[in-house]
Length: 263
Image (cartoon, rainbow, N blue to C red; front, side, top):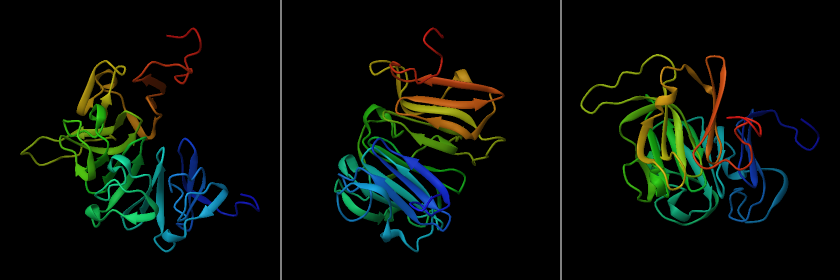
């Protein structure tokens, strides 16, 4: 806290060129590059200091997610708002148009979402009702999880699994969850679930998946959803006293933390 930023923050998120926080009062503030309207201030100008997104005043937001060119926010009522670059349908508002101010995603209004995440070109929302997942945006590499690579311009429910937490990468989606069997009542198991990954799994020209697939190398590990993180093309988590990291594309910058001579 300082005279330049007199807020206590509840939640924060960073994109490649912009940042956002939610204050303790549920207000959203953004700053950084605003070329695509991703700051939500009604224009495409940059902001060198945090500025209140006035269109969300009174919505009492609980979290925010910065993609590369778009932003999502979640209200206390479970409604999802989107703004910024709309290419590929990543805003979930039914078309490819960009938005300079936050807009309610009406197709999932009333579903009481509990989590949002924004990647480079896709987005997701997780419901508080037994972890049902909705994804939208560009579907290349199968990262939306619908067993194809089609673009979705509105939130579409993913079948086959339920989740406790989820994150969007650039070409991959990952999270913790449990299998859901068609025709059987869903029963949430103990803990936060298995690690699931889909999209690009082993390099840009290697193995991939167009639907949620368990990461069997992590099967049996107890992983806390609060200790699960994802970058553009790599994951890191903490489980059973160990730190684990792995990549989906070739590693060029040491982001896995193994050192120059590590495995």
